[in-house]
Length: 343
Image 1 (tube, rainbow, N blue to C red):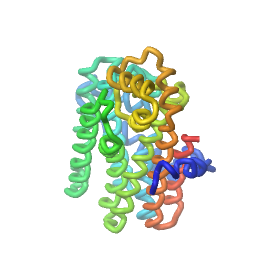
Image 2 (spheres, helix red, strand yellow):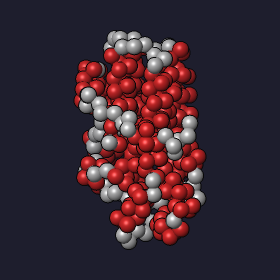
Image 3 (tube, helix red, strand yellow):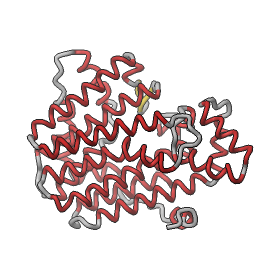
Image 4 (cartoon, helix red, strand yellow):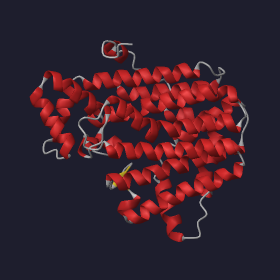
């Protein structure tokens, strides 16, 4: 597929979903409510500070998208309530929360979803150690399944997540980072946990025939989700996103919009290329709007949208290999809902 030539056609196909996120949650409302309580109930540290910080970061909430996917996959495999699946979903959310705590320390973030971060409320050392506790506690709970394949999936996946974060750090402020570098980064730091959320269910429900479709869905949905987030760093609503536009650029993160913009501008507009290159290298953006305008006008965002929609279609293609029921429809609607943020 020629991604550049098909960008306009794919942009025309950005969906307008008929459901919202709450409607998708409603498909498994009882399971979701029990799982949500288990996220808190699984905390049992004897150290009060650990409990205080853990509850603070978990209370920051979010949509619980990864555990929602786990629960939908479980019901798709077998349409009955599964205590094990709800437990696994809670563990997945605990791991996700730990990665966010560590991200906030690395990024020196003061707010997440409009609330003070753990590192801002306490300090970096406390936040890092509590993030470590959440990971350790998640694996402590995983041992209870007495499933070596499940434990291997999560241990390998957690290593991949850490490697993705380190790879991102390695390419920080690197204007020579490539699209391949970027895809390797997001495969680890974002997509891997989505894959763990889906493939863990195939192991738990003893449905090996679902392993590959679940894996493909998790990877491609995760890729699309991260690309969309990175596009929104240049086009979104700062108040809704909980951060300023261009923050990723200021932090020197190698995101697809800047990588593609640099690639295009290097061939077409040397002056703008140098402005963007220096901004990436230094993280010093005196006129953020000027740099944002350069990225927006370069044509990079159209390319990124087309890549996000391509990944969305691949995720939907993976779903076509699974039983056709309301739970598969819920997963499909999640892909449509994510893509609609590009509109």
